[in-house]
Amino acid sequence: MDTNRLAVMRRIGLFGLSLLFLTGWGDISFSGSASAGMGGAGIAVLRRPERQASLNPAAVAYVKNFRIGAGSIDTSARGASLRTLLGDLDVGTGSVADLANTATLLRKFARQDTELLLTGDLGLFANGFGISVGGLLDARLLPNEALRNWARNDGNPVNIPSTARGDLIAVGVFSLPDMMGGVRFSADDGELAVGAKLRFLRFYYTHYLAQGAQLQGSAGVRAPELQGRDFLERTTTALDLGFIWRPAGDSNYTLAAVVENFIEPNVRFEATDRNGQVFRFKPLVRTYHLGVAVDTETGTLFVLDLVDIGNNAGRGEVRAGIEQRVGRLALRTGYASRTGWTAGLGLGGFNIAYSEQFPVVVSRTLNF
Image (cartoon, rainbow, N blue to C red):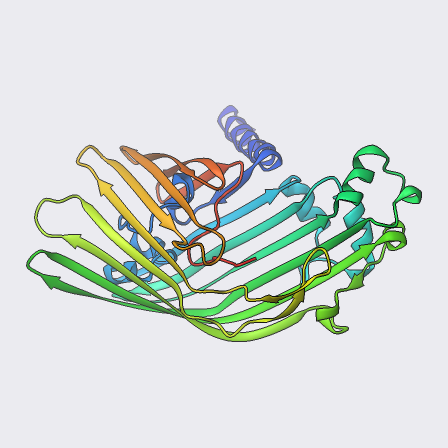
């Protein structure tokens, strides 16, 4: 094998090892939208509208000819490494774990609250219209204080206190599919783009738990709201609206607004929380987002988003980011007030981003 080929294989191997290392310490976002590297901000960005359409349906009005667009494929973990969670959770239809192994999982992740979040979008776009598929999976392992203290100070299953409890709760929302359309209206002082996204949704919910002596074994039990089933399933629809304003003349900024779940999905039911208390669960609620983007002549892009204004979904935050173009290379960084810093780069249409914890993607907001 020649020296050049060995060098190429070595670089590929080092790149793969670096990704494995990063997934042990933070979250990774591959390809798709540049927003992941800019603190999750970007609902007013129009540089690649077929990719930004997953954040703001008004962007589809700027798509010309046929395009393939991917929203960011984000993997996020909290409380444990991504590799560990993907290895232990069995993501299947309707659930993320086998009921027979629930207590074992809750013991393993008993030191702190643990969360796995997966999201992504992929679509086809042409001249103001688009069709896409996407989804979000949010799975959480939630030990109570007694179980956390046992894990940190003892660890012997025989000594698990009777007051210990752990819950595994997971929500999955999948678009099958999303249908988008957008139009532009011109005026003397600028141009307004309006877009709509009709979402055909499949919703899944599961909740397993184990407490006291149950935690000494391997199996858990189903929460009361499942009524003996492994998961709940709903089919519903929703409608998102998006707006983008571009002023006339030499102004280099755009303004944007998104109303997520303008028509709210009909998903609500009586559920129990991690303490066994009954509450009315409504995971998909109407949320409002505002954004601004400033694209300078030097290739610097500044973005600022106000997410979940009014905190209807409990996700209200400020997101800000910067992108600097250097030839074909794009360097990015950003900050989200709830989750912290992100960094990323883009080259030849491929984007990668890294963060200790990525913010939840606009258009995939869960009240959970």
